[in-house]
Image (cartoon, rainbow, N blue to C red; front, side, top):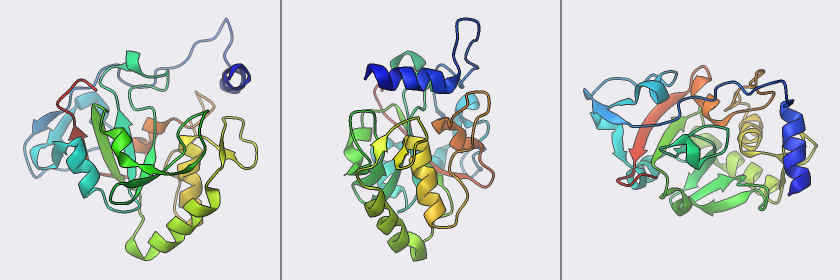
Length: 210
């Protein structure tokens, strides 16, 4: 664990005389706006306004998420997450109750239950271009990458939650889910909202603090 954390800090280029840039808002409070409007992914986290017909519970957002869509779970407060910000992880729905996930340093890439996301304050469902004709290829790539180690080292055969989702996109000849963030020298999960063409389908919110 110590070596992994050290590698991460070195990869980010941290030092005593440098500071990390902002990674987004420190608090989320999604509220309903007029129904029927579109969601601007670029401003969603800052504004917190979601059209009423697209604001549902976390469980409902999981149920409505299409196969192949990307799931961006978020805490309400930054203090309960890492320095990646309030939306510090990415996964991908495969079928009802199942998602493709590269979870953390202590686990490996594979298929997991979407139920572990129910304790988050919010869940943002993203359309990243995957269509039904591509589901078989997506599942084949998930199977091929199963067991891949979690790492920020960029070594062959390793990934973090963002680069894992990018790899799944590459297998489908689709653009990345997450752009490279030069200021952080890595791929930030919440930057999925900044990718051209991404579409927010649903925002799920928990009744609790998350």
